[in-house]
Image (tube, rainbow, N blue to C red; front, side, top):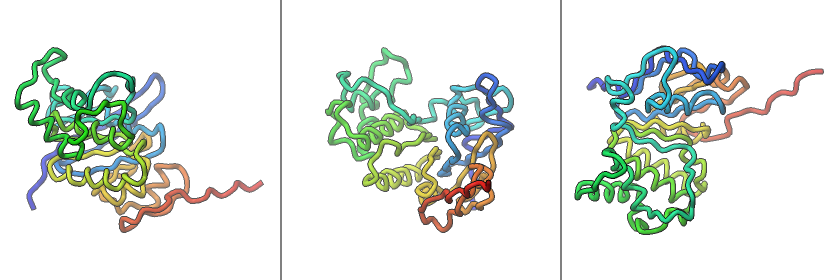
Length: 256
């Protein structure tokens, strides 16, 4: 089997917000064409890991490498879909305008050429959104907007795609199609997905990282109940064989 190259490596990474430790000595390796799901409780540091990879947050200790270089140097290789997309829905921007923003590596006053148009069109086609490229961005449903945000991320032709809770505003009916799109994209690039939906993640990803300040598990998705218990600090059911189901057990009432 051909050895995969390391796409992202975090070595003993520690991050603090003020006096609060958010990540504590995290070691994590993500290889080319991995589909990694990062799970853990709210406030456990999942989003912070993505921002560290992007170079938006600098650790107080440890090293971060993206394809062997610094995150800032390699940022052009990374597509990012944030958790919340805040914008004025009355702002007169179309889907096409939004996706073309992904080609603005040269700055705000960059002139677009035929290659920019070709790549942006292909990005919209990939997420099955080309048909509404002329629609106002504020008129889109949650699911449509998330597809456009992925298209914008793809427009920079990334080798790594980072997504933070991408189905948070997506209707359950279209959620499976969304994950299937990520599986398709994973054939061409590394995908790192932050999610609280452990059951769904266990179906689609090939590796899982459990994070709650520390990294409690990193490997294939057949993880133990013990690893999940350490991460979530409460009893959990085991995710097995890709069957999605409720993860948290009912907590026992403390004895009087």
